[in-house]
Image 1: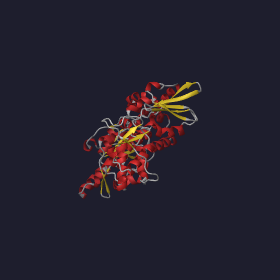
Image 2: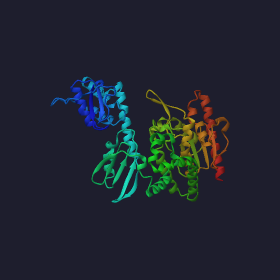
Image 3: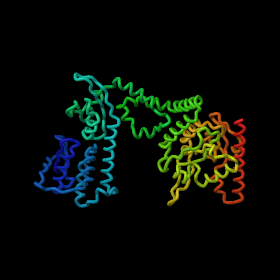
Image 4: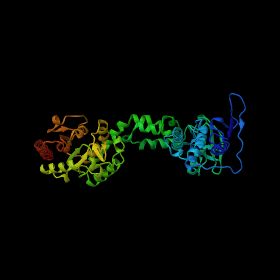
Length: 471
């Protein structure tokens, strides 16, 4: 056995030099013991041979991608990383394409290790919190962090560049970094008890954090995936998170009530238009359900912001997804013809959808409409509620079962709910009818004509009812 000694757990240059010598000496990876400093080597007796220096001028080249990978993997906590990288280096001389083969078992072992290291580096940058303490030279900022891997030195430049103007100390179990404004020094590891618990700035920060916490955007699963509980102890604001989550629904309801009261006090069209535009922009970044990922864009509602009549469809289709406007495809063209036959001017109505993203199944080059599920409908009810609060229509028409569920908050049969008024939660009046796409799916022309006539009659009754409400 041969021993290769490194100065530290993250000694990349030391590993690089040793690995080069091992390869040139034709020493197999399973014949090497990697040792950190004066640590123990062979536990089973027999002194291992020291690694001889390579001949002067002896060298070989490897792809830069491997050096980048090795530089990252060296920071991992797995003690086998040195040998794994040595094995990869030995194979690279025979198999130059190894670094680009994600299916190779060795690469499938190394790439996830590099990913875990990069994630740990990001977590340290995101979740480390400085606390102010006083010493003989004035203010100093101290932070505690417990990384999973050997990333502290690799992260030093980030904190030097970002906080060059202040004196700071970062404490970790492995080592400490101390910056006095001119020189960066390393020290021994520390414990959580060595770090301060808090400072006056934290109270101001927690007040600010609580005030900007948006209950409408709470996704507990996504939050825990990005910010695992193990990091919570480093951050002052996380003490507020359980209470803020517990009260999220109540705060959301309060926001809706407040928006209604504001609109009741100020009915000017200009202010409504500004509020609607802000809502549309916010909806363009919606991630409340998974449908946002494959869709081209959010398809928001359109029409006068003081419309007395609102139509709610089910979801955008293929053409709506591409155009970014509701009811412009085949169903939209049939809808336009029907409301014209019912003597309703589309330009005076607000038209939107219960679900704002196109849900589809890819079939070759075609994208086929797929019905939204209950979770997706309920997730989008937030936007419908905001649109109704801004527009305050006297009457809302739900086109199809998805729209009816969104409007009434429960699944209802179209046949049973059709043709009569329904009192909505906000005091408005709702009506239910079929979606125009249903008419397009009827194969029999006579049957399609009959159902189209029923649809137009529903719309005429809506128009008459709207006139009664206005009177």
